[in-house]
Length: 112
Length: 111
Image 1: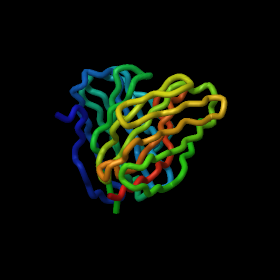
Image 2: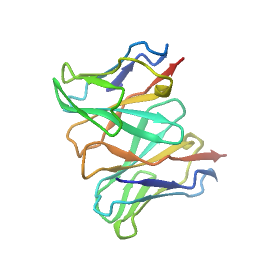
Image 3: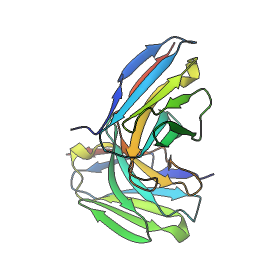
């Protein structure tokens, strides 16, 4: 049974609109992460969290917010979606920062 | 900032032959490396983790790490068509959380 799930699996959004991507894990892990995957860039870290109600910036946080309301749930929020945010977004979780990260199936976002 | 490069970009092998993938990294103090596999339109599956110089085997997958040469490799023994996927090298950053990924090697296994 999948331990990291993401919703929606795909989404089409309009430029300037608000988009919320959701992630849920049943691993009982403390750490959760959001990455984006683009052709030519590989996966890059956007935000992460190591405890509920707290989030940290990753390598490319501009244009994104994150929310960790509980240990199990981690959301990525695009307040004003832009064309450049078209990508596949992956959520991951790990027990501790050094441990293996387990990934969800990804969300394909197309901004028009 | 950590840089991770993978080669070759793509690799075609026959079923049963050995497949060898390469990954170089820039931060010689790194000590936390993982190989992931990504099937088309799917999530990432961890294959093998390695933390010290030498070899680590997980089933048909073997990782070799040589930190002096800034090099980690993955060898796939007796590859099968179901192993056709993109293979990603990931290095844990010492200075921050998160992983730095290479762009991947696309492996195609033909019967």
